[in-house]
Image (cartoon, rainbow, N blue to C red; front, side, top):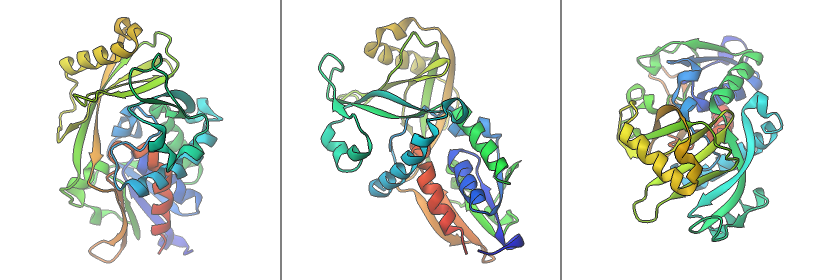
Length: 317
């Protein structure tokens, strides 16, 4: 490994993918600076659900490998939930059968079983998966990066070529649309409603087989997060009251006690979708090494550690 200034890396993007990539690089001995346009707690990642599952991400085979690599880490972090924000929680994956999971994850997810008709109205699967409290987890990642000698700088960039380091790692998510530029990156808008938890301890993810509408709820510390939507090419970050009402109604159809829960807030996040994740080496115009790590759709937290490890290896010249 090189030393000195040649060993410096700037990671651009302060969401979960950028933070995790910076952590892996710093803990491998690299001098790392993380550039983030918004404070870490105000990135798109901060409003994610966030259940570990490879949702809306391509290519499927690579995404599953990244997800399983990340699962190893989250299972370890779940031993310290108050610190890391990660817990292992049981819940129901609706419209999912054992055969869909057996080929890639069943051996890693003990306790998988089909739901009964009394437990869920359609085909479903009980699973114990990592559920991440994102504000807590992002703060923990930031602290871990600083502890490893990294630095966090709140600054915007107009182009990747202006980043002053021998190696640049692009984890800008939706920002890559302008910075690369890459017009294939597009938003998939997700709206959430946060309510007081009426005593729900398990999560559920459900998709209406006719309309395709989603309903999900995740018990997070001090709140219950309700979702959701997946609106392609929608840029508005403002919550829509009618959409919020529909989300509560769909979730209450699954658990009636949700109907009377007091609303604590509304959240909107724009998932950085792409036909396929871009995780590869490239070059800046002056020949410096550039590593792209973006386009993770709705699965950034699910694949963060697997992608970070691969990106860190690509960032070695």
